[in-house]
Length: 156
Image (cartoon, rainbow, N blue to C red):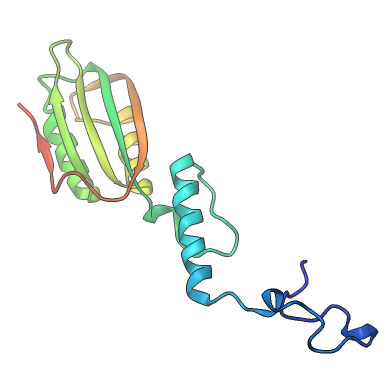
């Protein structure tokens, strides 16, 4: 543990209150400490660190992320886009979903990390009742400061 910079380390040896330079006696304002904590969280989020910094109260689920996806298998002609939109809206996510010319479904998810993770699992394992999912790819995952969309849309 580091000594308190406002305390005189030599007091026990007879040092007076003026023994430490003024710059070491100043206290850091609480607002500066909180701003520094916010910067640290933003930096860790940008690096993709999943853990929380010790002593900070921001929950991981509060971090917004964006991720692109593509789902392979029998995913066209089975209401996959409609079920994807419904599941995304149920989770409070925004983004879009569309069919591709290659027979896959692709799109983008945005929202709190915990909800996006839930949707990724849904896209990999569940989908619509009549679909058969071979695999799902997720790319371009990044931390975002605000959502780019206001709803979850089916793109025709």
